[in-house]
Length: 97
Image (cartoon, rainbow, N blue to C red):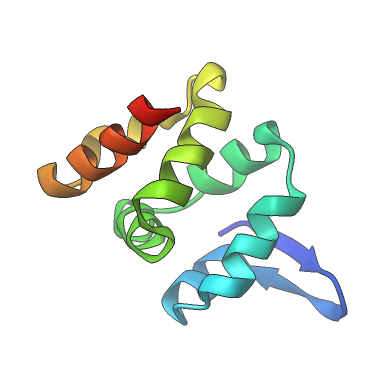
């Protein structure tokens, strides 16, 4: 799992742990502070279940934003593993940008 430091928190935090704890605010904070290449690296280290759960937690709008940021890096292919209804919601948001 990916390790990262979060402001005002001295210990490293694992993205997978934030996903499992459903800590939406902390996850959003993490992704706001990362460059696209780092986002891609952190996401690619997750397993399929965590990919799905991450995008469920973030919702279609934020998920679409992150996917657009990392898509040029060739790492957004995990979207193909999502359930169809979740893919459709995210793709609809991506087409609005």
